[in-house]
Structure formats: C-alpha cells, structure tokens
Length: 95
Image (tube, rainbow, N blue to C red; front, side):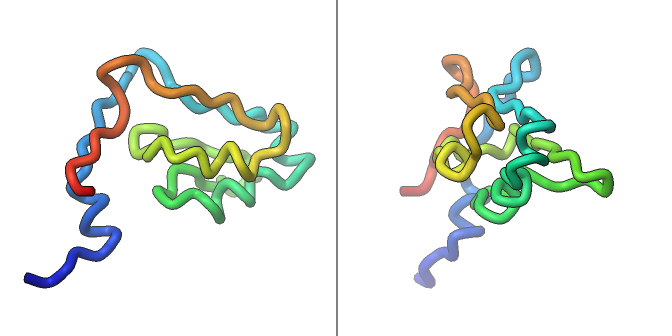
C-alpha cells in the first residue's frame, strides 16, 4: 500500500463549521503595517489566509487545522484567534 501524501491525509479530515462564530479575526491595519498579512499567507499549512488585490487579508476559517502557526508569525495585536467552540473545528481522521 502506497503511503499517503500530506494533501491526501489532510483531505481525510472533517471540518465542523461554526457558522455563528469565526474563531479567527485579522486586524487589517496592524497586519498591513507590520507585514503580518504576507507572513500569514506564506506560513499557513492549510492555506487559510489569502491576500486580496487591495492588500486586505481574507480568512477561510472553515479549513483551519488549529495548529497555531499563524499565532507564531503574527505581530502582537494583528490576529485574534481562539479554538472553535466545543463540537466545531477540525476532526483529524488520519494520524
């Protein structure tokens, strides 16, 4: 049996989307001023962040792996992040 690649493993995950509460918010002013936006786009393994044409950072929080990489690269105050409420978020199916 061929070992699965990282994208194939990630595709096995299940995401329970909390449509009432986004667990990631970007402070656009701080992100632009500090370059945090580009760091988020470059470092997120799930590609949750993207930069729009006007320089704002959009977030597709439904695909978040909750790994904390964004917290490590974000400037203080540029990112408001917390774990999703109980029962929501990523459910890993592959070890």
